[in-house]
Length: 438
Image 1 (cartoon, rainbow, N blue to C red):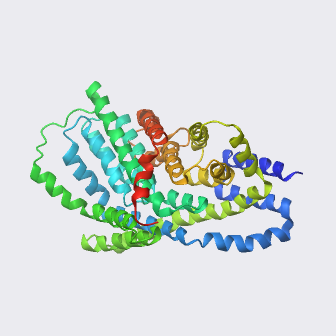
Image 2: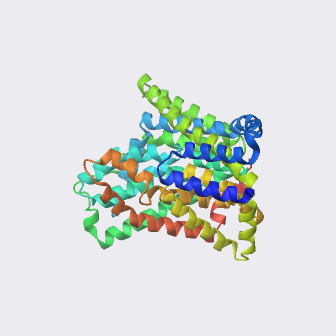
Image 3: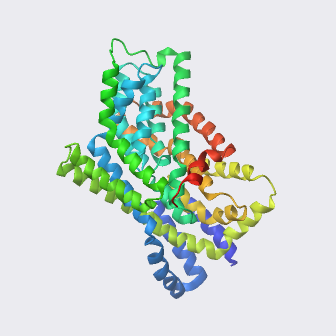
């Protein structure tokens, strides 16, 4: 059989495996191994993989993944999440829907020291949801706010997805991380404007908080509690932008800073250290297992010639690069209904990367577009991993139906932000172009 048809068959088989519930790591490994056996034989396959596994998984940039994870989990167990929400609440609660805006802002702050959206979603679900329900906020608004804003942790560095993307497409990890800050700020602004507008039109969604006296002294004092988040964010962002550290070194500095912060704030407990390390090991092991499966799958797909054929077809379409990005966005939104972010990246990138290179697409810019699509996929039915993560925390108070009902307004704002980022690439590229490091 022609190698091209091996590639088509392998891609379709992979989607079927995932659709019926086979874990992505196993699906990638099985399809990749069987395909390589068919193309190269058993001896050739093992000879190839004996070199590929080691050379790829030992890529230096991958060491940033556990470092960013431990940074986020230590920050979470240090109590930075509650501090961020409390400070944002004191500064923003006077606005229409102020607690919801405070939640969005706190998610952005916590995202600056957390590489994954799931810890942010679980933490804010425990802290912000009870506060909003206490003041009679609409359940769907409260739940939609948390599940949607928590995904900002994937866009605002540090980000595990960005690390994997940068290694796979061979672009600068430091520049990609730096590119996420302005789009993250734009997302927070658009969410906040939408919340204010909705509450002004329908005040029942978020009634004013009665009888709460908030002084400027109280607001200023609340800033003392978030100095840790600000310090960690500046440590990562500042060292990257100045070129003083590489991305991996910045990750190590951030992780070390999180441990130091735990001592300085006197929140050190061995139980917290144990929990942070165990959570990092669990998520890290799962991530690297998927990456190993992707090595098998990507080598198989490359040998079939499928990526070259797809690239030739896309180039032959002779349409604007923006329309091609829109078509790819539609594909990722569809896949996001069923797959998690890392799976989407590792399944599709071996096929579409040659097309992106042929069209000379800026891979830093496309990386931000991809991460924004990942955010959309994290709240899109029926998969919506962020929705299910929140449901596990607030199931007694808010049903999963109410959570999905609440995400639609936020989903429309995500599409608006995506359109802006596609139309104006400079939003993503300004900081990477002006930074001194690589």
